[in-house]
Image (cartoon, rainbow, N blue to C red; front, side, top):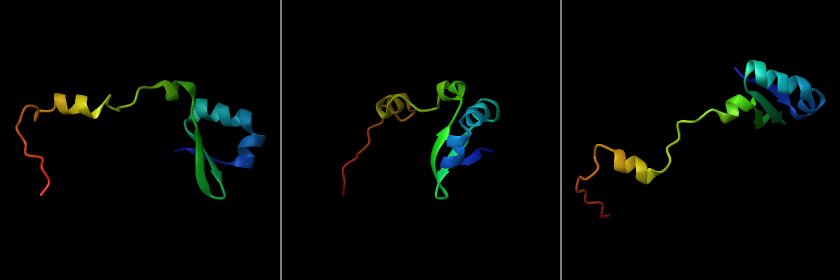
Amino acid sequence: MATEWTVAGARSNFTRLIEGANSDGQQVITRRGKEVAVVVSWAEFQRPTSRLESLAKLLRASQLAGIDLDLRRT
C-alpha cells in the first residue's frame, strides 16, 4: 500500500519521501485531499510495463489475423 504525503509534508521531509520510495514502494503526494503525484524508486520506474508497442502489431499477432471482416458502418 502506498504511503500518502501532503505537498507540504513531502517538501519538508523530502529525504524520508525518497527513502520510503526506495524501501516501501510508491509514495503518493496529495494536494487538498486529491492525489496529484507519485514518487517511485528508479528501479520501479525502469521496470518494463506490459504495454504493447502498437495496435497494428497486436492485430498482426492476433489469431484473427487474415480473417476477412466486413468493418463497414451501417
